[in-house]
Length: 93
Image 1: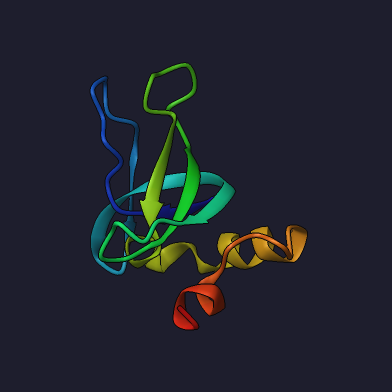
Image 2: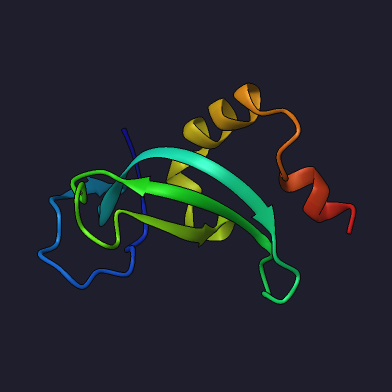
């Protein structure tokens, strides 16, 4: 499992982990990606958050800039789904 910034949470917060001296939420896995050009940072990933199972915020779209500590999961996602939107798609826009 990997970590990232805070998901939008309306329930009991899951356990936090320390990464480089910062408290962060754990990511279970990356499920999808998209480019949303209405956003300042258009590359978004659909994340399943660890410890949120059964809560309404178990899944959320997160900009790539907030996923700095999840690059291994993002790389695995793109290895498994080569056709999905990626950083190279964003940079060539």
